[in-house]
Length: 492
Ligand code: HEM
Image (cartoon, rainbow, N blue to C red; front, side, top):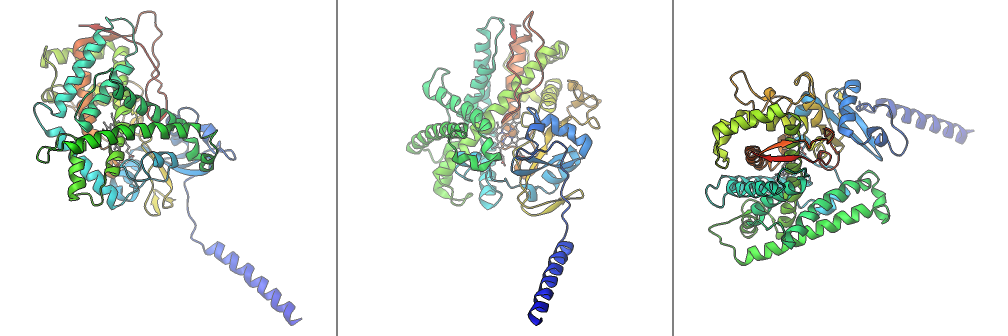
């Protein structure tokens, strides 16, 4: 009887305790799930081939903050300027980490680079240092400056396109080669002949690594699949391509070490090798880090610039009147000489066109995943520490409250009443913002301006006769390029 009573009391006590814990536990108010979630896959099917469009459409139904289920992982999506600015800019450090991404991490030495490194002192020192090096290289004037190198590349690209004699051609590859050479010049101090074997290997490896890592993201969604080689084929290929890039960079680092001029660092690798020796600004920086940091510049800087330039030419072919205005401005300000950065401030319409291209087709529409460093609130919702967070930049650029008739290509949006460029309007963040803002923003802006103005000065771009009007839908992947298209570059 006594032991029965004791057992009964014990059970009642346990039940009461569990119920109390449940009731007293602080309730988390997690962002809602949109409809369409299915077991195992979550929202993957509902997101379809253009997740940025679907997420932007869901914003209208579910508000600025919601959760999508990607396989086994919850991902919080932030939409609209207010929510994205609140997280990325106003509380920048709290949102500045990255969540684990097995494939991306493996391609960059598990945190030894910049783009995928977790938030912390090492990341901050590396990013600050790399930003200062790029700025230093960008400001260096005269022969050998980054501007000179981009201008040289722009004129090579112009000559290459002239060889098509106005015939229909897809110039995506030519643009990519030019953009790759700019990064080679900046990182290793030399441009390559387009037929050079190492150069071909390097630029193809970057392209393939990105392609395969896009396909290989299945293992980020279902991490256990990385142990199944048949399923993880793309992941394995991506890693092999990354090793090729790393090998080219290691070879270059050895050559740079042999003839390092300590008084006159020439390029990114020189600056890094000096820092490896001195350890002044980045504690613990080794040549291994240098390989991964340089690899980042190829991964992050090549497709982004190439895609944006391709979009700019596509929108010119679709809008002959706008193209005509760009050319008139170039003729009046630059004339026959090769455009320079000093012309930039005198060419508001050219600048406005490029800004409008980046608004209407941001090539990194969902940034790289962020992760909060502590549990925090956005609006009324709790976001647990370490959750994957995707800021939807596309939703900012397509918000009719800021951009009336957002699907219309209209450079005039970026000009004020006096015809001056409005460079940083609200609800416009093609390079993201805060602590994780794009490292190459200034370089990209220089490249886009010099390439675009040189090409538009030399050619009128048209859709080939009898060809269907090219689509302005993008191909969602690691970046957002246009579908392949042909154009005729008619010499002016
Ligand atoms: C990151 C855009 C060109 C290097 C990013 C991010 C965006 C972006 C949206 C993600 C930021 C985030 O996670 O919140 C662009 C666009 C470009 C461009 C639109 C050209 C039109 C470049 C170039 C380079 C570069 C030319 C360097 C050569 C990087 C790096 C990161 C990054 C290293 C990672 C930064 C970090 O994690 O802190 N970029 N980018 N990007 N970009 Fe760019």
